[in-house]
Image (tube, rainbow, N blue to C red; front, side, top):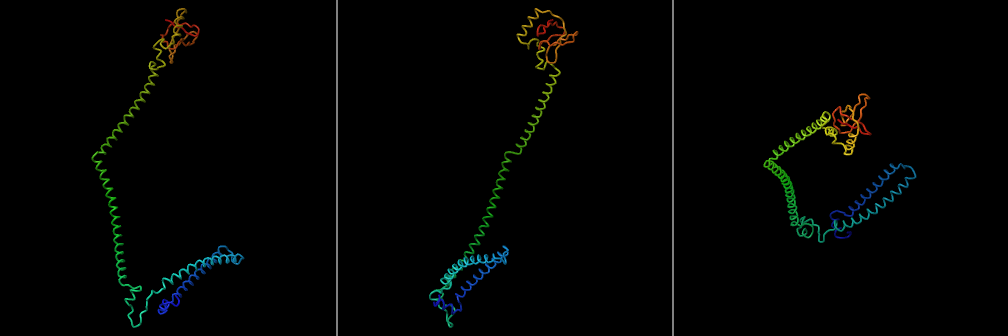
Length: 294
């Protein structure tokens, strides 16, 4: 830019772009120096190496880091400087400063340079329209959210009304009450049935104890030789014909066995199981059998 038309224009306005760029460079260098010094102090305090040989090693390490950071920053700043010269501090071609006896602004110069009243008016109009559209969009969004909430509320109300209508039409309440009543009656009947079963069981137990004829193990007592084996009956008949008889006291025990009691010896002999003979029946014993006869 040095020696160009842009430089002359900036000089006439007492503006030095390069001075601005240099001040930025100096400000960045000061920030880097302050950052490195602060890091050095914090590292020395944390590591507790103040006044030792390790302080020099720390300084060397920080210097290496600073050079690396400074090199990268210088490259970026050089690119930024070039961009400023090419775009920010470049005067458009044909731009001329107004003379003291001329009007401050010339329409032809503005049209050829950066001043265009029509373009500014269009930009203002676009900005206003954009602002209006933004406000309308925000209002529409609020209205849309309100409609969504109202729609959801209406759906819930409609569902509740439908359920209420079905409830009224089908008399679900009455059906539920009837089901509850039926369930209660069923539970009552079940309880009565259980009670009846328990009573019958207790009655059967008592009947078996106090009424021998109801006990299956004692049913044979009233049936004579019905519970005996055929071979036993035949052998008994043979011995009844060939043996002497004598009188003895005969009675039944609780298990259905026929017993003989001898008053002289006071011995009790087990007769055949399942016989039902009256007391005073004639009996005789042969082998393992006790034979009976009237």
